[in-house]
Image (tube, helix red, strand yellow):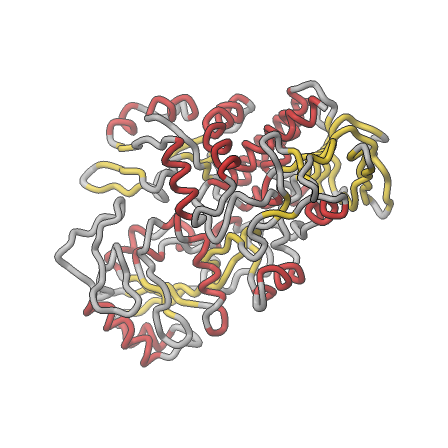
Length: 492
């Protein structure tokens, strides 16, 4: 049963909402956590995440504090480097084309490491992102792209650890409890209307934290705000992120903010279901494209696959795939790079073809002009430089020459059988438009003032990401601002 009143209501039980609930309980508030999903599907998009966190660290000792299982041999054979606040700022600015909210980005970077330490103390286990962010070259691993840390066990284990911590802390969790509106007036927010079991009830409260995700699972909103064709995108995660939190805040006078026509969207298996599958999780993603090429239905390349490290391009390339004829592409590789392909290329449910000749390969890949595809691959092979050493751990400058669409790094001729191709479409992760918040995670109204008692964290916060996204910054932002929001809500 829902309580009649409680100190703090948190709407949404993914990473951001759970961190908000933990922080509010830590500050002494009684907390009700509303999860729209049934218990078996709890955790929002976090449940489907790979678990990467982009955090500041000065070196291996900072990482040891988060990952005490990191042994001496692993440390001796690995170049972890360092990732400073200045590097964090620079990556966020470059990737978002200098449109991101500078104040929120500074706060995100400054609080990142201490927030991970706080989560670790709550029972979340972390580990290095072996295999996805570091390859072994000449006996040593070298991490690249500023991304080193992931939750052990990925999204499902992260969700379980945070729910276990919330349970120990005494937070009340209500499942299949959909918040449908805020009770708000001149004095701010005083309650939430909740639909559960066919009944709508009111829960009185002094503070509400909105952490209900973006609107990526709402086909109408996707088409309205992202543009024509976005109703055709697959949804990588939960089916419950339909923009409820944003809608109820706007109805209460909140200011919309951020890149409402932008989103995080990636290459996703063409035959994946319409929404995320908990049995597969993040396995439908296909992120090893920097080591091959992508071909559309016309048999042509359409993007520089090696423009940058994967975690600086993957979140925008889904949009480019959606813009191709029939909204799909094939990723093509040969045997030389097979060992570099990520684990998701080896799952049982994968749309894949293999052939011993290029002629046979282009005949087998479906819905593609085979003659043009073969000509595209041969032109690429002729243009790929062989005088620059291939190194997957750095931007190696091994580029093509003379092509209308270059490949700037990791350009290996596709000439060693067997050849493989994987069919991908667009998988949307989350939307970038949302609500304006301040440094205390208070939701700002259309007059520029905080709405008393209303806070927000996670995907429904606007202003952090524009056009693109540096890998690992979404979970990190959810945790940082979730913790800030929960603490501020409890103070009220």
